[in-house]
Image: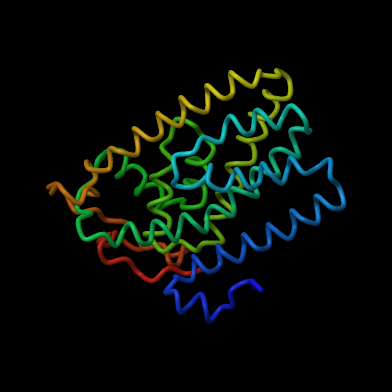
Length: 248
């Protein structure tokens, strides 16, 4: 009979602490979702939105807008924002696990957008919490910058998750009000999903410019990130190939 893997078994799989916590958070979501479906079946769509919001708010190129707009037709925008934000908070664990592995790549030695990177580092050193809030709230700001700098700098995971939630909730709430007021047809939402998925996929393929392509060497300045292990006393930049141990 299948049983939930114990902590020892997960450690034997050589999963990092963040991956183990992420796995158990999924278990908690599954249990909560089962209880929700059992006790309030009419709210099952909120659980589906929460599950969808995990990959849609991670490094994976999955757009969250079509899902929020679709479910907003059936539930109050406030509930939609809560469900989507919960999934986004769970995705923070995956962000830390994935970015931690990504930044240890031996060929990360150049910044693709030097001006934007330096600007983000500057403000992350001054106001790390509100800088993350800004990047998660404002659509025009590239969220991947905050997703990379936060774990790379040693910024505590719980602070990152809270800042992410503070920025995401009003963004989801506004989008949910739009979907609640204007019931977009399914074919339009599907087309939006396909177009956004294609756009995000093509954008993600430009990693070679940041020195992530295994088949191409890219010369550039070494990526330096601030050390925010202690957010109250930030330290100057350190090499991205020498990541400090991150606090939880």
